[in-house]
Length: 54
Image 1: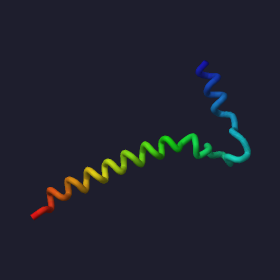
Image 2: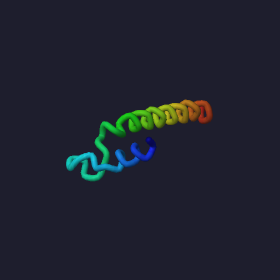
Image 3: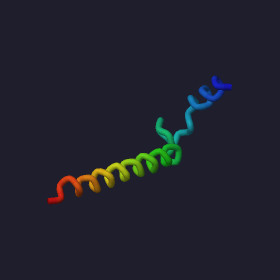
């Protein structure tokens, strides 16, 4: 079963991909990564206000 999935994943997806996965395949990861990055930036800026306030 696992070998079948690996072989199926190794097959080309079509000529329109040019060796890359379609955007829809990695769009969720882009959204998740962007959300985490936005959260980290928000936390850093909120902490910076406390540190630098005089």
